[in-house]
Length: 390
Image (cartoon, rainbow, N blue to C red):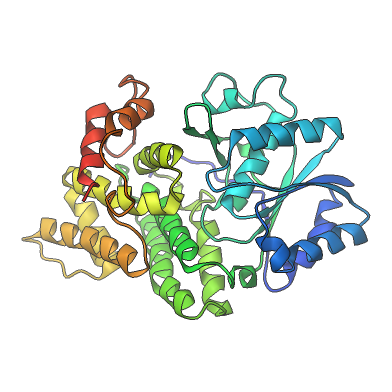
């Protein structure tokens, strides 16, 4: 196990009706906020009105900025930065899923910066400060409600890039599992794939002697595997949603990565896919992750066999660990199919005419590699995309 420092200051407020506390929580930081959200779903559900009522009761002024799309856009971030500067806004409240929260984080880090916030996403500058943010989570998936990360898409070239700063962890996050009851089934499935990918990026490591976090990863994966089919069949099953929502937060609040090196190649490859084709992030991961596994599993067959036996209950033979490893990958793909996700690029309607472009962008024209488990160059990425074609 490697040395580590773990500190997650995000206050989690979990349970039924907890969105009514948002005004009280925001009032500890500011009396004027940017209320950031996506489309009309929070208005149809009544969540919008409940949030406004709580803010008003607490004496908090607010300006609205809706319109966040999946794979959130830099142009809306620029709009939010201007709105905050022009109106002396000191706090951002994000109400929605990971895209809304990521957009809010980008605005937060961009407001005090003299240059273009995109500089942070392409490593031209290092952020030194950010406005505080709070969140009300409506979609268990991205884990952004307690993470240091933000991912934004720049429409100029369709580059999708991440940043990670401790200062971007939300001050508080409100998690009411009942807010997920009305999610479309495809969105639920995409969220499940995203959560599982966050865990697997940490699970496949070269670090030795990490059995505790192995077990934590495996338990969190099995929670998603067990309860996602339940909520797909019973959308208003609060107990099942509570398990999923908390698993989504734990998957990406850094706990599962303590003491171990991580990978993140599959995420980086998928960012190129969804940056160009605007596919749902979870759907892209459901395609890329199994392909990556098939490409790299021989690097550590025992770890893949462990994944197969502990997570997917595959029978293990000391004489045939590779058979178990491949069966685990097959069962992962089968799970994705059973919950309604694509598992090939053909399923997404994506052909091979831009594989080289995606691989080049991901590796900065083959001057950098992706991943910590097995470093991947430009040709490796082309080969993985070809394997994902189906």
